[in-house]
Each structure stands twice: as structure tokens, then as C-alpha cells.
Length: 405
Image (cartoon, rainbow, N blue to C red; front, side, top):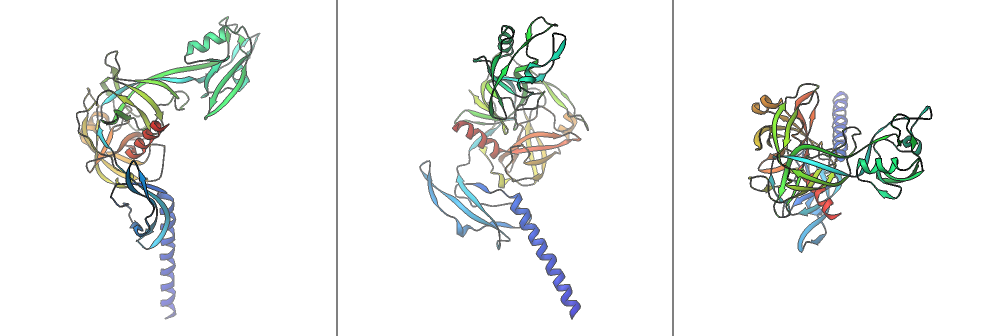
């Protein structure tokens, strides 16, 4: 009898530890806030049953002239054990055209970015005025000597004509503005006054358009930011152009060596403008929809589930094709890294053409159950058949924030 009691208590302890571990896991892994489609209940696709206590829903409020329920509710494990309180807001989910067409990106940065620091040989010694005054790689120079700079030539002209006079530099680092004093030195090599820094004012590349919203004529693409190739920092956008592109070839991806789409800008015109370069993608306006596809609903993140899906991507020519994938893992937590889903290419046609995910496919829309659920963002370096995807909800929210700013 005593042995039976010990066994029972042992099983009870294990069960309680299991429940505590589940509560801790879901408390961390589930977001603190959710959007739901108007008139729909919050429904979470968790391995173990997690449901909201809808009896607690809350606080009617008026938004955009229509009544929507916004408020807090408690998530409960098995509908019984409280996990945590979350905010739920009803929204009108947008209708978006899934695209998959390639597009050319031409960005002109806001100010100029320092991409390198080097010494200048002056007076028989090596000195670096830029480093000495406090500037570093990745800093954004906004103005020099009270003159705004937007190109390499602007910076070169001011420094060359300084004749060694100390200049006030306004720069930005991690969103913080700095005011520094820069004193150029005379270079024995170039016979010019120099500051010992390399700067870049623009960049260009290709990516994939994720969606187009017909009503606003706005689009989203890439699913991740455009970053400087040397510093890895997000390029602060002054203005940008969207240009038509034709894909001319593919370098197949291999283990340890991601592949790449090769393309060329087709014509000198532009098909739209870029307004924002964010952690969740690039956004702008296009005069007309680039796709012949019909608009479909955008999925909210809790509607995305593991299993079969497909992407639209262009890996030759100008027209996208549909390829099967598998969504293997989902992370519902708020994230600006563009890594909300782990996806695997299962379509033999795409694997044959590209080896899986390659550079240039970023932004390829992911569709599941007739809804736009996200976009391809990254490739696994050691397995090009796998990569990451971002939720469409995160991209659209970032676009809305830029509109409101």
C-alpha cells in the first residue's frame, strides 16, 4: 500500500512539473497581444489546447466608425489553467494581391554612411582624423560644416576645400545624434586634404514583391531590410526607386554557399517609389499592380499552421510560378528579425532550378489555405532547401506604421 502511494505521488509530481513547464513555455512563447478578424474569435493552433476565456472579453470601443471589441482576455491551458492575460483587438483584415514578381531597388541614403576608416599619411606619420574625432564605421553623416550632405562628392568637396580647418560634423549612430569636430589633414599621397573615411550614398539590387494593395496602391517586398554590404547596417532611406527587372540566370545554392538570382534592370524608367526601408521589409507606391493575381485575405499570425503551403517566385524571366513548400516551425512571438517561420522547399522543380532558396527570392509570398501568410526572408547557409519566413501581418503592420509616421 505504501509503495502504491509513493508511485502515485511520484506520478503526481511528474504531472505537476509537466504542467508547470507547459505554463512557463506558453507564457514565454505566446505573444502578449493579438489581432482577430472582425466577428471572429481568437483561435490558437498550439500542440496542447490553449483557449481564451471569451467570457472575460471586454471593453467595446469605436474605431473607424464601426464597433469593434478590443480588450483583454486570459489564455488558459486546456481551457482551465490560466497562462497569462493578453490584449485582443478586432481589425478588418486587408485584401492583398500576392505577387512574386522581381523588382529592382535603387536606394539613395539619408546622409552618407561610413563604410570604412583608414589612416592618412601626413607629415611622415599615419593619422586618422575621422577616428580621432569619434566617427566610426556604420555612422551616418548628416551634415558637415552646417551643410547637408547626400553624396560622396558632397563630402569630398567640403573636406578638400577645408584647407585643414576644423569642421563641425553632425552624425547619427543607433538613432542618436552626435555633434563632433573633424580636422582634415593634408595627405602626402593624394596631395589633398582628407578625413580618413570611406562613405557610400546609394545602393542597388533586386528582390521580390510580396503583395500589392489595390486601394492604396502601396506594396511590400523583401520581408527584411536593405543593409549596407560592408557594415551590415540598415541603410537610412532618403528616397528610392522601383525599377522593372528581368531574371537572366541562377547560381544554384549549395551547402555553405547560398545561391543567387542574376538579373538586369529592363529599361531606364521606374515603376514606383520606395518610401521606407524597415526591419520588416521595404515599402512604397506603384502606379499599377504588377501581378495578374486576384486579391486574397491576409492571414493573421495565429492562423498560420505547420504543413503544406506554396510560394510564388520568379527564378527565370519575369513571371512568377507556384512552388510547394512545407511550413515546419512557427514562432508566434513578436519579432523584427523576419524569422517567424521555418520553411522547407519540397517542390522538385524549384530544387532542380535553384537548389532551394537563393538570394533574390526574398519577398516571395507564402500562401496557405487561400490566404497570404508571409514572405520568404532568409536561407539556411548549410541547407539551401530550408529558410525563414516573416508573417504577412508583421510586414503589413510595419507598412501601416510608416504611413502613420
